Length: 138
Image (cartoon, rainbow, N blue to C red; front, side):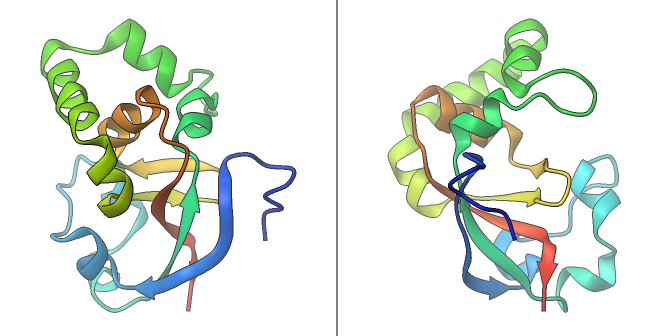
């Protein structure tokens, strides 16, 4: 388990709840999405994954294994449609903070789903949001 006092990516690693990805995220993702590479279709509505709380600001600044943070990727490479999407998430950041659920793998750590939502939340300074952790199931 991750020590939240040492690792600021996590607000808490104690599960708030467990749920299937179908219940937490909705429909199975398109094949070209990162999340589809991590979870098999039959696991989508059968495996119970832990829901924890993460800090979007810290994840936004985290440098990935590829050598770039989400912040750098957004600032350097975001297309106009992506900027509009992030802007729409920024406008409803307070609501998203309560409702949004992102998908992560805490063992790497890696953000698997919700890049634009996380960017909008981070840019608004939101420091706590729910995330389903694919590294923790029961």
